[in-house]
Image (cartoon, rainbow over all chains, first blue to last red; front, side):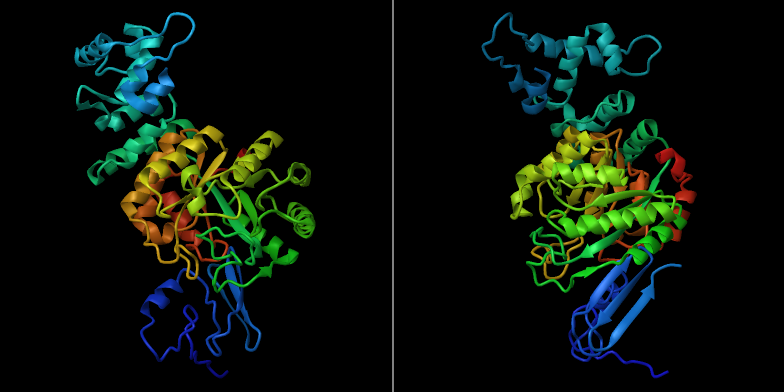
Length: 68
Length: 409
């Protein structure tokens, strides 16, 4: 499977190449990404007690269990 | 008289004209009180208690003594020992602190925090017991809300990245099952709305029925401002608890929300209480309110007497008017926990949103040892929480049993 490289920050939607995203990375430990890493579109995000799923209209769904 | 003394101190001794003989406390009463409490305590006691004072004089004098001890006499600030006072009034008698006393607690220095938390913890153990109530929450309808609550990323009025979405019924039931598997006894369905419309009520009917058929868990709801008909319908569905927060003290509310009033929230809370559903009503701290306004929220909740108070700590959300506010200092958050416990000695006091940022692991532990007796496990509505296994391990480490399902029925 081809690994997807995110060009944009899932938290602030700015290009990953532009400036540091350390604070964004810390925040993403406590919240799901809101922007698509490939096209920076706002995603539809559903958080449930045990997981989250984020859907980009162009690039589909990503999801992650937060505990099992 | 006691109420005015508590509110305004010795100025409360000024009686207004009224029929009959006025109730007067003079300077001699104050001196006698100070003399009595500085005399050796009664035989067999190590210190003066309110009960002992009442025995030495009478119940009228007891009320007076409480009021004077909560105010300032002759330039000596007797309220500096508010912790001692809390021990006698709240721990021994189960009587909540007054507004002025809550302010005193919130102004205590950091050095007093360990003692304060210890008293709050003992109050919780004595009046609520050692059990901890565990709950999970889920957002049935996310985002696109018509209201402008300045702390909330789900308002449709702000440039928040949160987009509207509805949860389907199978996912709702799955969320309830996952919550139950943690040992939780409560599952709260939340919708970001001013109040429910027919579409939302219909989804609730379907969802509550499906959960009750599949999962042994109590279902709670949080759907905004209700009409009496909607209250009745939720009761009929089997919703046993309803959440509707005051959010903040009445005097600060207009700085937080402009699209509805504090009174509308109050009215819904009163209707819920009258219906027989349990009322879950709390708020947020760390939104720029003053210490007095924070105390005001605690006192107003005390007046409302909810079954449960969820205490949120502001998590500044991007795009909201409060998005640039600083995270509340941990010490202030712990002081607030203790103050709310002393204002609400018999109420379930629940950790809600923001504790991960504001308190961290150590602060979370300190709060559980400072008055908290309920937690939300797992994720929140739009943000992520701790792994429930970590919270459950912490509760086990603290020898705090999880409230059993049959104990909630």
